[in-house]
Length: 320
Image 1: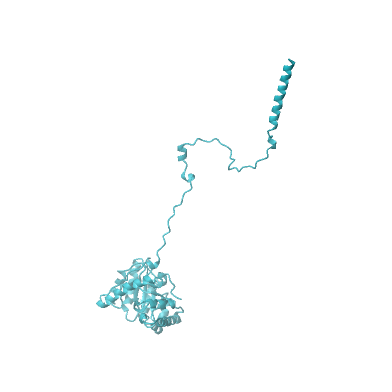
Image 2: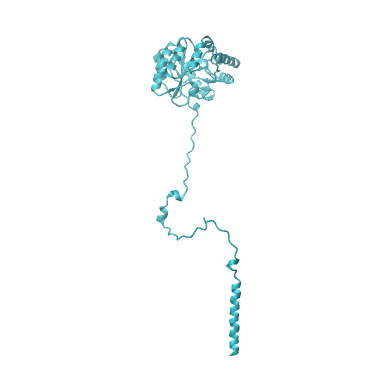
């Protein structure tokens, strides 16, 4: 019996020692190093999750489920003004068959030429409801002042391509045109066909005319018009070297041929388009043109056309 009691006592001690050994092998809570706090985004307090159902998902606004993807609209570049090129209009029943054929051929050829020299030769302005009234071959001391006064009366600006030797004779008329806000531009010195001159002669001609105009108004033109509209590579090169762009026309009133004011007005009103450059003349022989100008202005304004000078129409500098 004593042996049995001794065995039980030894067994009880072994069980007690084993328990102590097991507990002593676990680190105490105090011995665990502290862990840096985790951001609240991750350590949000737990909440009781609501059951996710199909109806719950579908009821979530789209703006909360995903960021909207903006639709990209490809930019549409505006066409350059020079890409808008008009057919040249205007007719006269006084032209001979030969003259009509020559004029028609010139119109077709000059448009092709202007397309090749978009930055140097202008037939018309951009596709906007603006037009320009231009006057060649002056000044004189009767019709040019009458035209200037009509422009002033209606509050519009014109563009005058003056011949150098005529400007020298009538400097007061040149000054009158300029003082009333009109452009005074270069139309050669003696109205010679520039295509029949050398490059040096063309430059000398344009420079001589510029000098006369500059002495009168204090500004040197940057725009010129070739006499008769005759223009070729040589003229473009010479004009570029003297600082000029060449401005022609898209409506010819033919006021030198069929001179009646009614015909002049109809050549404009029957053909008018956005950006038209209208050709007329201001010389001692164009009384009917002076009569037509106020009628033309009124008709254009009724059609909501803005009558502007060439600098505004073409967005180019008129003076150097």
